[in-house]
Amino acid sequence: MIKKHIPNSITLLNLFSGSMAVIVALEGSLLLASALLGLSAVFDFFDGFVARLLKVKSDIGKELDSLADVISFGLAPSVILFYLIREHTRVLQPGWTDYVPYTALLIAGFSALRLAKFNLDTRQTDSFLGLPTPANALFIASLPFFSGPAAVQDAGWLTVLAGNPVFLLVLIPVSCIMLVSEIPLLAMKFSHGFSFKVNKLKYLLVLLAIAGFLFLQWASIPLLVIAYVLISLAGKNGNV
Image 1 (spheres, rainbow, N blue to C red):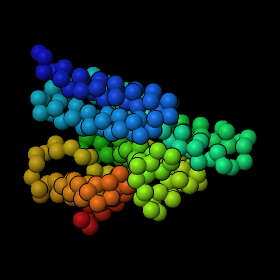
Image 2: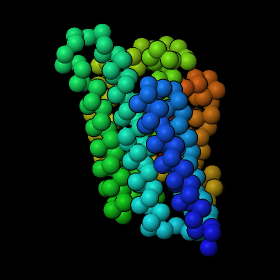
Image 3: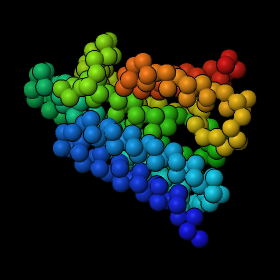
């Protein structure tokens, strides 16, 4: 049947977009790379959504999705962060700083580890343990929009923070730890229908995303990822 191949085709679009993001990032076009990574995130959401809608979920689809995500949400954000760190450490002492940007590739490694663990972990069917790779990747991919020579937005203190080489370097171990942590987080999929009672936290995040982008534009993305973690933790503890 043709319909069983539709979700996998969308997954391949995720991989194609993510691969393009890597190439254009290597050419120094960070804004375009970030936009392509965002497009990968859209495809990543819809491949699972369509698979559940058509009731054609499969083991090969799960494996293919993880392979695509290693590129789109592991390697692509690592390359973007590599260039950001290199740009903001040029003013520092030359020599050892030439090698510092390569530490960003640790995120690609830990993203692969996170995805491998996810495929084997039966506890992560309706929720996640650790930060999902798309959320981590979008956090990093948003930075070029308000930091660096090609920035299209002045986000005030966020611009200053994102342009600080210390912040960018600290972001690497924080990302790696969050990816493979045991922190319980929401899965942004409507597996049990669209009722408000069951999905109130997800609808809250959707509303925050819309309002945040209207008022803060690109600077809303890293704040939304932080809000996602906090709201997930609050909901887990019964406070939301």
